[in-house]
Length: 86
Image (cartoon, rainbow, N blue to C red; front, side):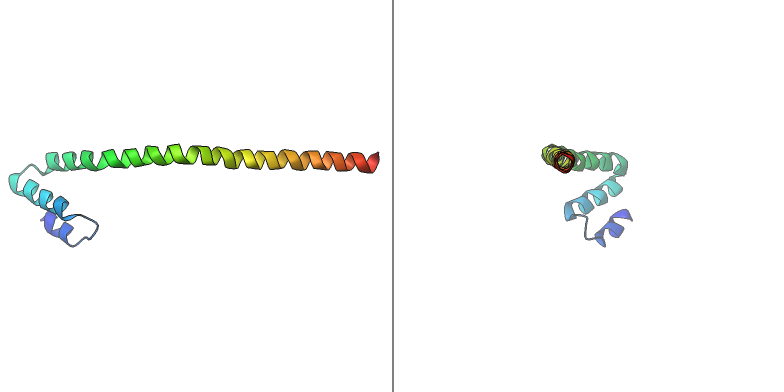
């Protein structure tokens, strides 16, 4: 039985295993797994959106810092060449 195989896996919660057992016994395992997937999907999507909103400004700052460092290094090189030639 599927619920017995799940009982040997520590990453599955006890409530998940019990729901699978009930779904097997009632013959509606497919619809029960669909409902479980929807329950687990919502927090995952919220976490993904939160991480994306948090990382976006950080990545903009990193890329801006790299571009700024490149621009400053190019201007410093031009000014040093101007001092040597002038």
